Image 1 (cartoon, rainbow, N blue to C red):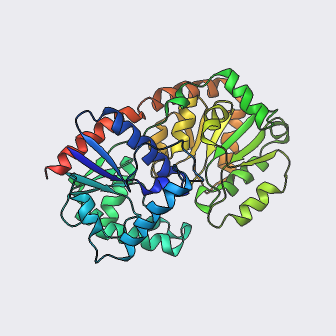
Image 2 (cartoon, rainbow, N blue to C red):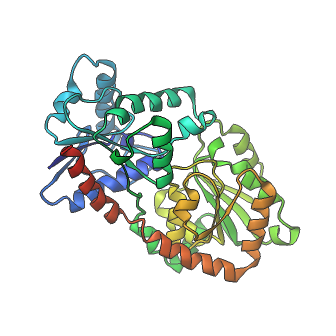
Image 3 (cartoon, rainbow, N blue to C red):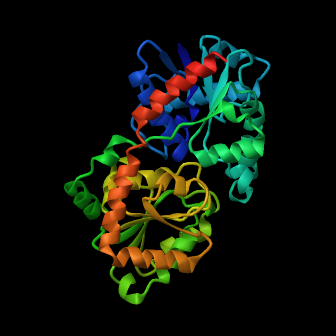
Length: 372
């Protein structure tokens, strides 16, 4: 079977979706056997994962983005039809505006925030996602949803055939399962972390609800707050100015590390006393699954896919409630036995989020889609 995957997110600045395509394609290729996994636009082997830059050097990136631009803005020239003609199935991202017309289509539904919470996206992003849903989701031979909650939302909002939407959980890189004390110590020294810390990792944008986390940290009892820092790691995103001003104001105990390279994240997470993620909506929530794999006790919102991904291995709170979040943080920080219990549960829960299993299920999915 010949599978073509649109991998253009690997050439762009991106977080979760880039993480998904990077590890997914690599593991699909690793287990493909006689099957062929091609990555559009003509990506063979690619370099290390950097969320802020392309996985290829600039001289290799720009011609490929130029080809994508041509395909999107010259739809009368059937380039995608020609590319897809070599494949039994083609898996598209929302970077391709004009899907091929003859080859069976598949795609991954990463989240439904543009429908559920359009206020957290630019108008252009909302329009692009809705156009992609009309042109691909509605015509697809099969769709992957990254969580049961994402499938439920997609079927409800878009009136999709539920039999065509298969839930295949995303994976976690193996480095998150294999952290060591020496690596934790090096990360702490590299970032100047000399106290226990609450950690958040993610793009600084309204959907991540970082201000509620900051407010909850400020509301901790003085005796607790003086003993622990709040560490925030992540690049600036859309409408992040007000939150970044708070993060950069050097409020007592708040440390803003900005973008942290992928290689440093496992040790940074493993060293956290608590990992807190109070996002308003996630399709899967990579940082939560990664933190659990590292053994960090997690505190998450009780909405969207986050309780599903945590699966009883973390505390959940209403993301609207500062007092509830502060109370949960206080409880975690002052109860070592609870942290130990959640750490063990989280490690066990994270075992189901393996890229090898995701790739295996995906190959089976592609075979079913190609034969529909």
